[in-house]
Image 1 (spheres, helix red, strand yellow):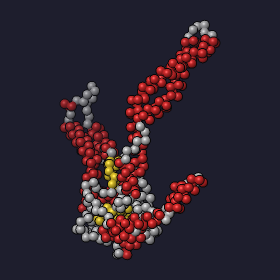
Image 2 (image 1 turned 135 degrees about the vertical axis):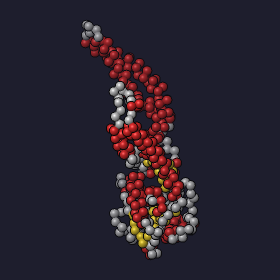
Image 3 (image 1 turned 45 degrees about the vertical axis):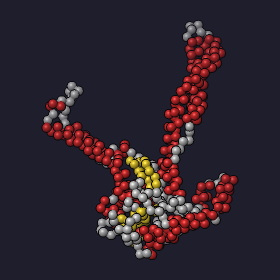
Image 4 (image 1 turned 60 degrees about the vertical axis):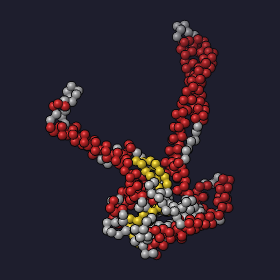
Length: 415
């Protein structure tokens, strides 16, 4: 069988030479080739970017459409966000070709993308609609001498062109709405074709799922009230001082025989009294305004922070949003559990590697703190990625055998 390997986030490389799981010296690829499969790697940027994943999905869809022109089955093994690239590619493929693909997603936190309604109305057909609209307006010669179109004087050609324009607008609106809801239908359609393999303790899948459901509220209404009052104290003081001095000086200088004392000395003496009174009035207004304002400011801040954190974690750098994160490729289909023997093998593997590294990792944390080193860079250099279940799927022979067993299952065997 021809098998295509799709790597995940931060696991890309410009060459297929190497020991990553999808490269020529990688354990998973060696096992597949030893079993007689014809293996190739699909490389993409590997960035945590929704835009990059969609771009990669388009390229993968073209490759799969090309490979499945005949009746031959093509297997695809994807890891982590590579599974999202795979699922998007299946949604973009020709429908009659999807059945010839045997997709396996390993450790994938599936992101159900939803295109924003605004972007749905600004698709590829929008410029064509604008061109039709321009041509119709150019062709129709409405008499607007008195500011109103003389509809009773329209010729047959003008009526036809306006009808075409109205039908185009309606078709564009209907197509945009359809595109907005189509992705959910695509996920449901192809969800049953993807075999998802996810360890119950996969750190990345669990973290992204928890983040998508967490209520991130960095501030409260009471805190917003306090911050509003505190932040407006200095502007209130400056405004009160400036207005008070200008009023006092204006009143003093308005007299015809105003002297230096009237223009400068008296305003300086009277200013503190006016300033105090004005500042008290402004403080009272601020205190009163801050209460209703906080009920608007607190949710606004919480929403901005929550959206920013989720977008950064999920790589949402485009116009799409995510309405579901989970280990299942579709909310409508169940996913078989990993065999218990495989689950335990992976736990033993990661526990063994992590247990032997605790002292070393602790030393890195304390030394970096004491010496001011780059803690994250040191940890990244120190990790072998055998310590995490999410990155150890293809490092455990039992897990690799499980993937290969699914890949070689008969097509009619239920998954």
